Image (cartoon, rainbow, N blue to C red):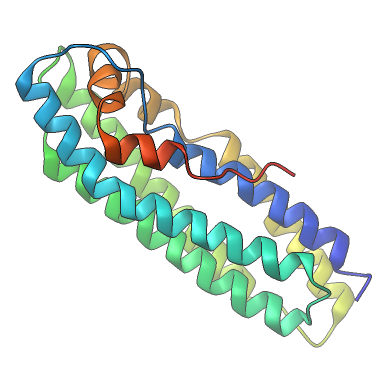
Length: 194
């Protein structure tokens, strides 16, 4: 299995960057207003289980890629992980949308942009799941090449895509989110940088 193992490690490293998107959902504590705190609590409480789901999916891929696993096992694990991530980002988008706009200037645009971005990330993971499902596990060289392509796309996905989330959390919104226990625990989730 030496053929796919370096690629698996690259995939795992690229994936760990994706976890950073979720962990962006935290800020620094400060005094804010009640409406904003209530909004932040609503978002943080609903996003927290999704960030755990993403962290668990990352961990599953890390574990599978650290072993000398058979291509079929790597494919099965990656496929489930990508589906879980797609579902989690979609649920986060729904949570942010359901919470409505934060009571700050430009709140509606920030919310709309973040929801659009989360849904786009969800679709990207859906696409990666399809790609990994389509890989030929019987041909190790083809499988390794396919994983390399997926790792490249994953790397791009992890580097882009969190601008709207960062904008959503600027200023007072970030401060209000930073006070929420569920956002603190989401940001404390381990991010595996390898």
